Length: 85
Length: 85
Image (cartoon, rainbow over all chains, first blue to last red):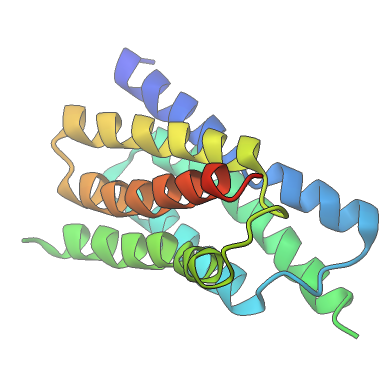
């Protein structure tokens, strides 16, 4: 693994894990009314497109970083839908 | 511009603009107490590293997408610090 890929993976750890406090908060409080469904839908769509972009370019850092981000974002989205009512 | 770059730019529009509702809300309400300073600091750091990654790889989609995201995130960070007290 070269140093550029390591830089991408470190960047990915930062951007992916910035989602974690929100996910933990939603799981803990079971309260997601203040979260925007449209915002997280747009974000999940964008992250999904980045995964495709990474796959086409065979860029492992982009694929891994966005796969982790997608998992967190998708889980937050499901919690928004679950605790909607 | 090839179709892969266009895919990256579309992905970037989605992920960057998912930050916009939060920025608009903070500007409108002048109230950022519920926003996590550490979350947006981590995010800004990660986005900055993605810009470096894009520059090293000469990847224009990664550079543009993350430059826009960095602008939004940095502005939100400044508003958090401004409206802290």
